[in-house]
Amino acid sequence: MYKRLLIVGFLIILALSLSAKPRIVILATGGTIAGSASGAAQASYQPGVLSIQQIIASVPDIEQLAELKGIQVCNISSQNMEERIWLELFKTIDNLFTHDLCDGVVITHGTDTMEETAYFLNLTVRHTKPIVITGAMRPATSLSADGPFNLYNAVALASSPEAQNRGVMVVMNDYILSADDVTKTNTVNPNAFSCPNYGPLGIMRDGLPIFFRESPFRHTASSEFNITNIVSLPKTEIIYSYAFASDVAINAIVDSGADGIVVAGVGHGNYNRAISKGLEKAFARGIMVVRSSRIAAGGVDQAAEEYDTRWPVSYNKNPQKARILLMLALTKSKDSKEIQRIFKEY
Ligand code: GLU
Image 1 (tube, rainbow, N blue to C red):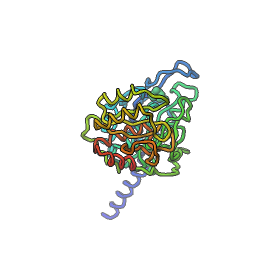
Image 2: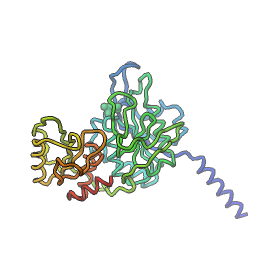
Image 3: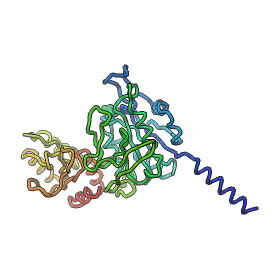
Image 4: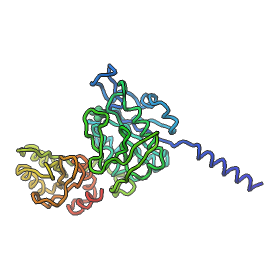
């Protein structure tokens, strides 16, 4: 009798666990996915208008994928992203995963700084559960809004057991893109994102992921960056290099009290004499300098003749990602060799 009860109990638990849908939390931050225009074919619109509840309601069949809970973190255009919101996103996700309150997280986000939020969380949330970021290039009121399908795919991906421990992923236009390489490469087209160095991680098809590759870099659960008790991050800036650049911007950055500077160099991370002089000043004041490039692919390594080998290089992290990695690296060390080690591993 006791044995039979045990078997029935086991079967009930098995049935429940098989039928239970994954619990996915959607953290909404605004952007075009929440945007509204006065006409269905109009190019101009206002981002960050619709609530997460309105967005979820606009996606047919999404509730069949997962047990959804929407949280409105903010409703902004992502060019106005703030450090405070990054820290809030980190804390919220860390808390959800630590206490097993959900199985995956989706973030809706403006596309302008989506790659930066993705990389920040990729380096700081030390868990294996899926984190997927999505958005839209066309507002929700558009004739062929891309947001609903992007959100559907993002929830489907976050619900998939195959999405575990792959780092933070961006899902846009059916592509699954890794936070360490994804960048916005078109200002207006719905196919706006790519991974210029490594290509996409995979694609979404029929609500399921098909993965082609894994990220070769440390991320999420294997990250060494513990920001649990951090209330403000080191200040890092980017200096852009171009033909006959003056010393105005570099001097202003050096005098601003920055902790680190990333050079968005020309070509293989190069810069002219005016910037070089400013960087010398930075070095003398103990400001860490990392060389990156304004070129989309190929990266910057130590194998060139034209620069100062004292500065660590960013490899294939673009300047905006290098700035975030430098910010976090400086929470651990101010030694250029150690900073270089970090840039190699992340
Ligand atoms: N500039 C806005 C933002 O990044 C709208 C662009 C978008 O979401 O595509 O939030």
